[in-house]
Each structure stands twice: as structure tokens, then as C-alpha cells.
Image 1 (cartoon, rainbow, N blue to C red):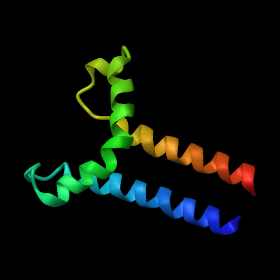
Image 2: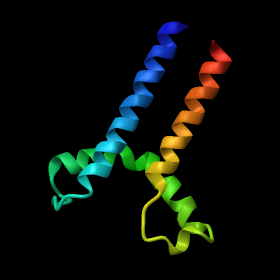
Image 3: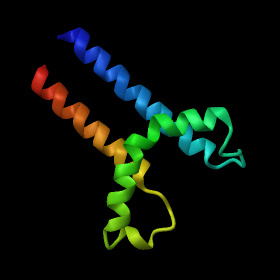
Image 4: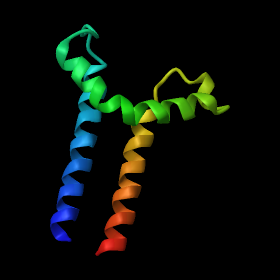
Length: 89
């Protein structure tokens, strides 16, 4: 069981790290067709995309100039991590 929890924790931290790298790289004028950016988008968009769609459909999110989906995903990952660890430990 501890091996499963350790693997899950590592996976969630990798996802958080990839999203963080994507956030940082979005601040720089890097071409979107750069191979590293394309891989990063392919790995993170399945997680960020649905959250971004939910935010944009809300009354608050439709007027935002900032993408809040990474922040929401970070919060959701922490909630999921805490729930799973409390249930299984």
C-alpha cells in the first residue's frame, strides 16, 4: 500500500511540476510550435482544458483576462491527495 501511495504522490508532483513549468514558460516569448512547448501542452492540456472550460462557462470566468485553471488544478490536486492519503493511511 505504501508503494502505491508513494507512486501516486510522485505522479501528482510530476503533474504539478509540468503545470508549473508551463506557467513559467508562458511568460517568455517562446514559439508555440517549439517541440518542448508542444510536449508540455500535450501532457498538461488534458488536465487544464476541462477546468478552463468550466471557468469560462461560469459567470465570473467569462470576463477574466487571466487563466486561473492552473491555480484551480493545483488546489484540486491537493484536495485529491489529502482525501486519498487520509482514506488509505
